[in-house]
Length: 311
Ligand code: PAF
Image 1 (tube, helix red, strand yellow):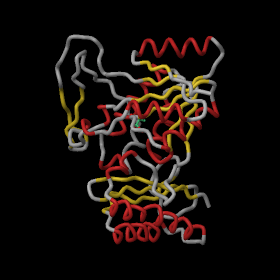
Image 2 (spheres, rainbow, N blue to C red; image 1 turned 60 degrees about the horizontal axis):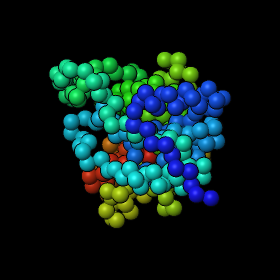
Image 3 (cartoon, protein in one colour; image 1 turned 120 degrees about the horizontal axis):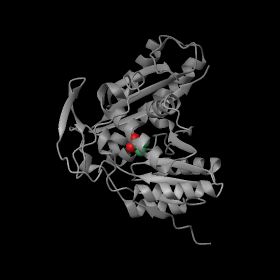
């Protein structure tokens, strides 16, 4: 049987209409937001969405709101046709690929651009596009501060804002996020709770290559040597997890072990933190469920990974 061809929608009103039509037919809508350049990790989120709902929407949109001026949005990889082919190969395919051109274009006339400072970083407070300047941001104030938020201070307000916009447009019953982006998943869960979105947020397990490297669109930018070095992240996290299972609950000792292993392999640590799974607050010793989160540079590529520890 030929794979189902998804409907490609780029207009937000059409997207909303489609979801409402599904609802009126008694169908539940699942949603997987992505920035495209899909890999097996994304496809696993689609498979997860199929387990929860009758129809599935995937969005492909590279969100300018989550890039700082030093992070080059224009070099973000994209392969729309390849992405659609990959989605069609997933059992059940997807029903809609939502591919908006510009979610910050409001068809207005005001083209003024403005900037402001967050944690000493200049950020666009108003995204200048063809329409009225966008100036409304969603912030999850505490959860966004630590871990990746330290080195990427505007990232999570950009993510929370675009996910809010996408939720309002796609209007899903269930949304699936990967646990590789652990902080992002927890932030979206908290936002949905705090702002009363009628959406269930599902966290889906990290998908790894056969050698253990967590799948990421950034992996293609690693040289063969850097890729080899990067295996130290998962290996050392697994080592720390088994040390914890054997009674080592002192977080400093576990962190030092991971930092040393990654540094000796040739990586440069951005952070290695053991935090509470829900509050994402740093803990000194493992008394409750925690997650060990790492971000490290290999050459010019910054990778993140994590492992949950439930003793
Ligand atoms: O995880 C991502 O790909 C992005 O942060 C998301 C959730 C699609 C928002 O742009």
